[in-house]
Image (cartoon, rainbow, N blue to C red; front, side, top):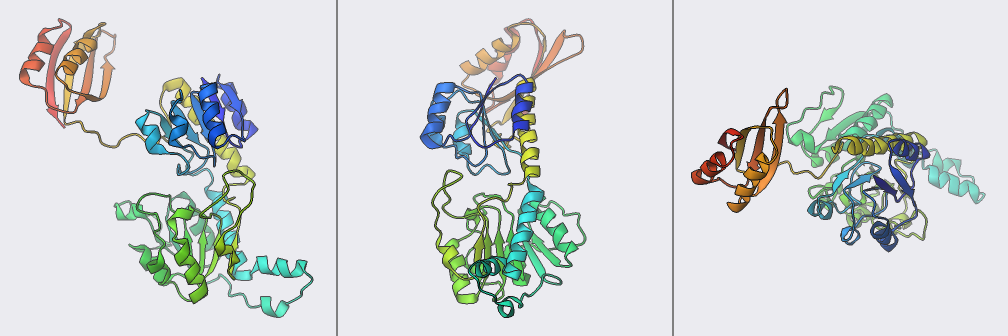
Length: 401
């Protein structure tokens, strides 16, 4: 199995993938057309990326069967295009949670103590203790958290240690998942979080229902002079509305993610938000600690190793949760060559598509049972033809799903 790593990746992860018996091609600077050309020329089975974008045109002429995002989320990968081509997409959730939580708190403290401004003045020879002695302090403040997955929970733990009150909202609470954490306050809308927050921090994955979730209406609910921190995805925030909130209501902002970031790890960069007073930022480095990158590399290597050994993909994100299947055909049969081929040939002749199938072999490997999910109901005559057409079919029956 050939693995192309087209992004920065820890040597420990490379060594683990090689130890699993894979051929590794490490070209961390590949982007855009260079990556597309490499996929066509080198024909890897697996692609590992971190922040490098994987677009539909790159997948047009490729032998890929698996794309691994060495990080949380898969927003840099065209998952729909991969799904149409039968390419697994997987990621490494939770491995960077502590790193992102640490940066989130660093940014909150930097906003409150105006650390960036302090340093800037000191470097230009200005001493202004009077101005910078007016921090509010975090103790007793209310931290509002949008998104309460691994990262949100790590942020909450640190906030509680700082003596803060924590109010959270998560999409999974709306779906009925419990929180199991009695020391934070759960509310049932992002608006309810914003109403109470002295500091609002975002830890949401990018999805259709989170894009621009932090919009003008939500930001207007924040108290004048509140703090806003985003270390998740730029697209969950309406940046024009955020700029207006800074100008009109004195909202102070810290960002690790921006609307238009350079495709490469270095390059020219401008963002109008950073020209406003009270706005600070970092270079999309939330997951960039040695600890996090080692953990992510180990998880990416595990995904490749399991896939090579079993054909199964840990953390896969693009398998269907439901299919068009309406009926399941259950076939009990002797475990002989040609039995399932006989069944599938007749299903094809009946214009029935197999959505999922599994064949379970009984002890001794003399008999097996096949469960075949179909996108329609086979007529009784077709079932009778299948049953009579092969002597190794012991019986069959149909179940409506």
